[in-house]
Image: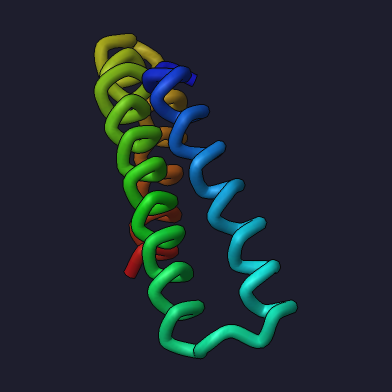
Length: 89
């Protein structure tokens, strides 16, 4: 992975803490909107992490494939990106 590893790990640890907090909130039968707000915060961080990872993939892995003469590698990277776009859509 070519993304900023420390940044990704820091954000993942933040989400990990938020998930632990969410579990506690559900166990304590906290107010639905409070739980929803925490869920949205976690989702936002996860989206941010995914953007970082995909940016790095495009800037490094995909660029390297396109720079090579390996048509199969280029086709593979394009197919990967199409699958990700389908999942995001």
